[in-house]
Image (cartoon, rainbow, N blue to C red; front, top):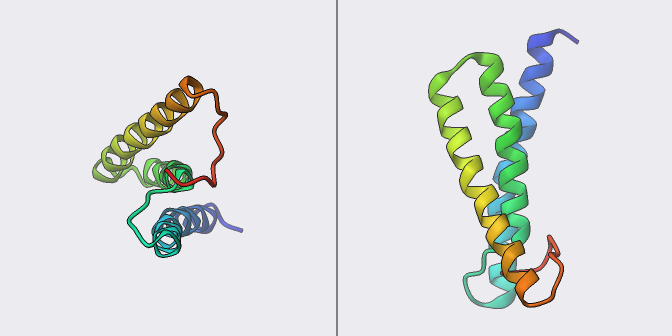
Length: 99
C-alpha cells in the first residue's frame, strides 16, 4: 500500500471514530430520555482527533492541525475533570458510563 493511501485510511478511520461519538451520544440520550454526554463520547473524541491530527500533520495543513490540536486539549481536559470527580467520590472511571 502506498504511503498516501495508508494515510488516507488513517484519515477516514479517524473521521469514522470521531463521527461515532455523535451516534453514541444520541443512543445514550434516547435510552435515558434526556440529553446525556457519556464518558465514551470523550474517549471517541480524543481517539478520533488524534488520528485526524496525525493525518493533518502528514498533509501539512496548518488550519486542520490547529483545529484538531485545540479540540484534543478540550477532550483531554474533560476526561481529566471526570477522573478527578470520580476519584473524589471514590469511584474508578468507566468509559461506558454516562456522565
